[in-house]
Image: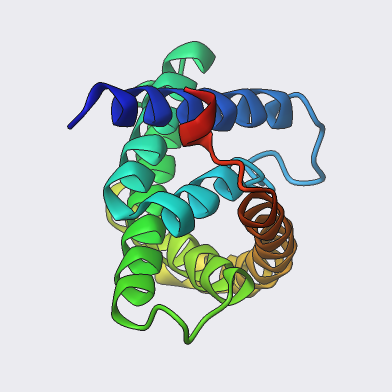
Length: 174
């Protein structure tokens, strides 16, 4: 990996971590609910630079975010890591296999769904172990994930279009 690529990943991860940190300050109606605005950076990274940089941005954001929040290796970290990895891998595989089939909105919704499913699976095996409890909250999680995934996808689509139209990319900044 070239130095330029490392700088790009570091800068994108810093953007994602900053958004993640700001978002954690916003009160939500449900304590564990996050809107996932940092995933906008991950999706833009995937579309503009590929799967490897997007995976790195996700892993850096999850690890550093949990270290800064004091939740490293705790339940929140495991849920975030599992959901994040499931999300970026599903979006990446679909984007690489069918590059023109899904827009950023479609990819984001797929990512949100696999993120939620990944978290539900981890919650079941490591924490809850009562399928009834998970089935009770799953519809709410899926609904909110679809809504936030749609919003994040629209924002990502706008960012990608504007960056491509203006000829600006993170590569030009580093």
